[in-house]
Amino acid sequence: DAEKKHLTFKLNYPINETSFSIIAGLQKPKKVTKNGVEMAKVADIDVADEGWKYLPEQALLLIKSQHLSAPTLIKVFLT
Image 1: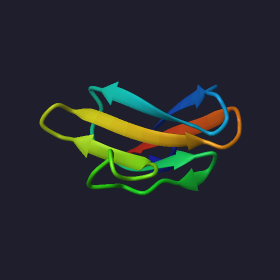
Image 2: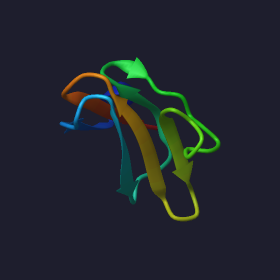
Image 3: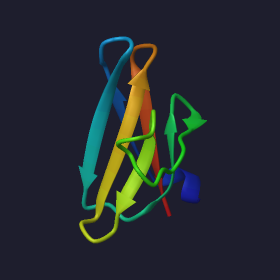
Image 4: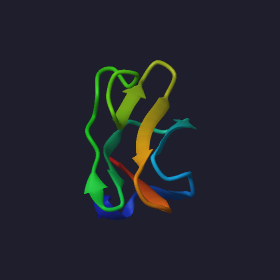
């Protein structure tokens, strides 16, 4: 079951702040969720309010998350 292949992590970050997470060595994810809600795949992570971007050349996943509540649960679903 593809839904069972995922990486989960929890972020405890100050309310109303934005964080960047970098995960190296993963394959391109199928989707990324924050607190159970699917995040947008974005072309430019610097301009987006939040979302995720995958850099295949470096096998890097970048996640930008706004923290409106604590903690924030991120799940990366792999293909």
